[in-house]
Image (cartoon, rainbow, N blue to C red; front, side, top):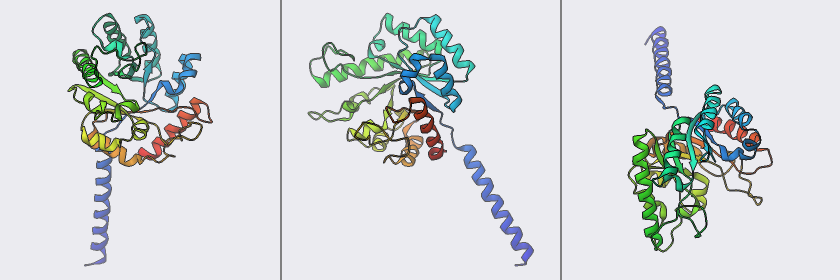
Length: 291
């Protein structure tokens, strides 16, 4: 083979490889990254507009709003105007179980979410642990039947929300992934055909369940992953994202292949930094790890 032909062949292979890499990058679906506002709740309460603006400037694409249920439609319109001006979307809303029961509260929640442009209304907890505690108060006497009752409520809510072009999701705590008397509540909730899940990766692992195995067990059910690293230290401070022991690349690969992921939410508790400094560091690390 002549030297010129060899160089031409090498150039062709290099060009083909570059084209393949470019095509792969173009075909990779973009997964939006948002923030669970609970992570900066103290700042948000003090300076609502300023905190959301700071979050948008960091590079977050959206948020999951919390403590919005008692807003008026007028207030929701004010918030939507602000969000549009800073180009921040409402991916979901952190919503108490009572707003998923048919009635005036549910109608009001749907109206607020429509104004805000939410894509998902997320039930933030399951059964109430005490008669006067927060959570869903089931009529059923046995725990298994209570979870089935709650799951039916979520499924019916999901059908209503679907008609309003929104999804219904469930945010797990440790209890849903823990087996008691042969019952793992999350397996019951997953039977709801139209209910998707917001899986808190760190909480799931601490409860003894592998989030990767969960996503494979229930393909297409994980709309969102809450991204907090772990384990926490003696002061209950979680490490900055990517500095713990969670295999994030494998988690992301599973979420984006079989999990059904639509967006990610970073969420962080107490650290040695301020909440806004913390979520900025988390986002920087996320971009390094996920790309």
